[in-house]
Image 1 (cartoon, helix red, strand yellow):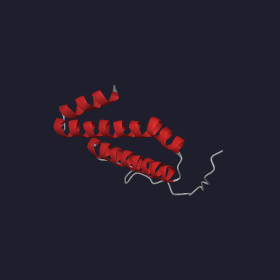
Image 2 (cartoon, one colour):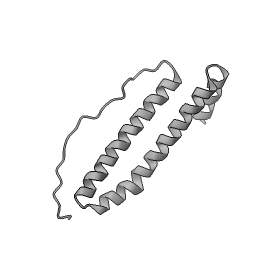
Image 3 (cartoon, rainbow, N blue to C red):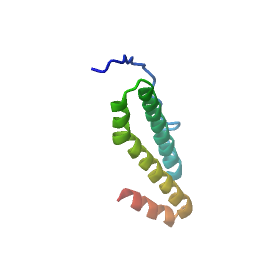
Image 4 (cartoon, rainbow, N blue to C red):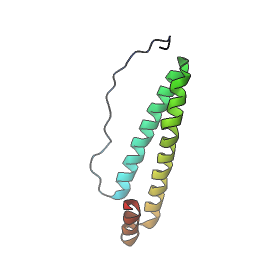
Length: 101
């Protein structure tokens, strides 16, 4: 077992800022906000692990979570850009089919 002592700190799991969205763009923006929040929490955990000298946890977070989070943030950001460019009507219908596939 590692020699450093860890203590568990309970924190409230935050809900998205809204649970209902009028437009697909608003839903994707909420998803992006949530992904960024998760990413920041992982970065904070990584920093705490590094401060405790826990290289194994740092490596685990980097390999299993942080890269995936960054890729997810980029993907959602790209979708938001496409939705904004597509506009309402047919463009939004095409984006909906693309996201669903």
